[in-house]
Every structure is written in C-alpha cells, then in structure tokens.
Length: 379
Ligand code: AMP
Image 1 (tube, rainbow, N blue to C red):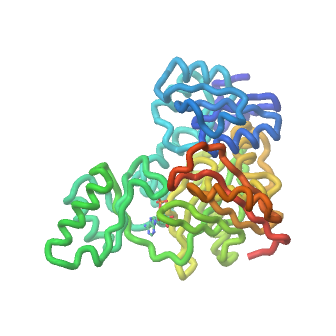
Image 2: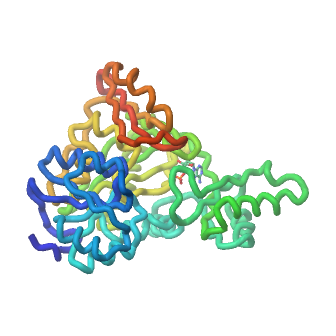
C-alpha cells in the first residue's frame, strides 16, 4: 500500500487493515470496537501504561508523542493514522507526515481546533457566527476585552482546556463594589493560569445542540440528527435526540457543519457545538476534529455509529447511513454515578457502556448510558 498519498486520496484499506489511533481514552476504545465490526484492527499509540482502549485493541505502543523512533515504527506498522483527542502535538503530526504516514482528519483541522482564538477567527472567516471575543495576553487586554464583549463574559485559555477546565466566568455582580473590578479581573487571570486566553461574551442561549457529521475521502458528507445537550459544571451531562429545534434550525446547523468540513478538506467525523438563540439563530461554540461525546447515542440508535463512520472515513470506505432508528437519551456516568451499573443494566431499552476505568474520580467520565425510546418520532 502506498503510504505517500495525500489526505484526500483514494487510499482504501480493506478488512484486515490496521488503523493507528493516537490516544487511548474511551473514544479510542469505542473506535476500536467499531473497527472490529468491519474486520479492521486498531493499533493504539499513547503515553499511558494503562488506558481504556488497551482492553480492546489489536496492538499498542506506549511512548511519548515526541518519541520519533516510536512514532516512526508506529507509522510503518499501520495503514492510516487518526486521533481521538485534538491536542495531539503539531510536531508529532508533522513528523508522521514526513515519514509518509497518512494522517486523517489532518493537520489543518488540528491547527484550527487546538487554539480557541484561531478556531473563532477561522469560523468567522468562513462566515460562521461565534460569540464576540477578544484575545487576552495580560490584565490590560482583559480589561479592554470586557469593554468590548460586556459582562457576563467567560475567560478561557486558548489551548488545552476541556470539560470546563481552564475557564472562568466574570459576572456583573462580581464587580459592583469599589475596587472589586480590579480584584475580580486579577482573580480571573490567575484562575486561567495567566496563560494566553480569549474572552468571550456570554451567549444568552435557549438551548445547546451539536451536530456530528462526517466527510469521506471521496468528499461525501453524511450528517446525524442534531442532539440537544445539557452541561453541568462545563461537562456534558446528557444528549437527547430529537433536539427541540425547528426543521429550519436543524437544516441550518447541518449546513454550517458541512461548510466547516469543506473548508478544512476534512476526512473523518467532526463534532460541532452550537448555541441556539430564542430567535432560532445559531452561534458556533466550538468544534472537535474527532468523534464527540454528544454523538455517543449513535452507537445504539443508528445502524452506523459515529465511531464506525469515522473508521469508514479514515479507511477510505463509503460512509454509512446516519439515520436514526430510535429516539434516545444519552447520559454520561460521571465519577461514582457509574456505581449504579447493576440497576441500569436491568432497565429495558437501555444500553450501558463502561470504559474500564479503575478509579472513579469526581468529574471523570466513567461510562455512559443510552436509553432508547420504543419508537422513533421526528422533531
Ligand atoms: P466549552 O468548554 O467552550 O465547550 O464550554 C462548556 C460549556 O460552557 C458550554 O457548553 C456552555 O454551556 C458554556 N459556555 C461556554 N462558552 C459560553 C459562552 N460564550 N456563552 C454562554 N455559555 C458558554
């Protein structure tokens, strides 16, 4: 097989082929399980000695993302490389490409998704609306940003934030008393570790939805129904399909997801998170260049899940049918919530997914449960 083919080449990996996955968390685990259904194998590359994907993968490499010897051997051992988290170092992807590996969805998507400022500038440049924002590199910029976007506002680190980590909210009431404003901005700046950040205006959304979409190596795009998401403490709590949005809003969200896929010449699954305003207008919060937590319901409510869809895309297979055969509510099992597995396992129309993590730390995603409705109904 020619490994010198570009991202959008007709590279097609038949059953028996090996997909390399950077990262070994629960997303890697579910990708490996989906690949196995198609007769494909997954080789996990991650620095951790033990991780959720190790229980179900064909092969593993335990090495750092900067270990060029290990990366080179990994590139030789697999037919295509993908990733299950967006913070794969850019140097790692450049190195893999320099030794001839095909990396999908590719370096461009990572570059745009790894930095919240770059991501918002990219979205605006392709005509997609975001929250108002201002780059913040010091206290003076934070003060200027608050003048621009108003309050409440959310200060987020540009890089490496996830599940509400690396962000803090500046509210109106925090800053009413004399001297309180200066104190509040200093605390906020400290809370984000004085790291390069972005200040976002608070979006008064009515609901949050996400779109899981895929683009194949041949340019075909397939899109799942929007899910309605509820977050608690910045962590996804539940995703429900159908989302309570109009047909028009759903179609608009799908068109936005398509335009992002096209602009990135993307191959694979993407997760796009939206705020829905009372008017029905859509604001993109962020996108993740990978399978997404708010698409876990597709495992049980669709013939072809987001995990299989991603494997199909990166392996150069035709994309599958994303239609939904059931309504569903996916709930994340966070920390000790997963201890109730026995009761949930006894519920009707309920699919319990546990990630094999040993320690139930607070805020840690231990598994999820998807409850299917007996019959499908539309929005
Ligand atoms: P994020 O880490 O950017 O995905 O944010 C996590 C959650 O915080 C979002 O899903 C929203 O519920 C909330 N949030 C983030 N940014 C904003 C914003 N600019 N306006 C309102 N809510 C936000």
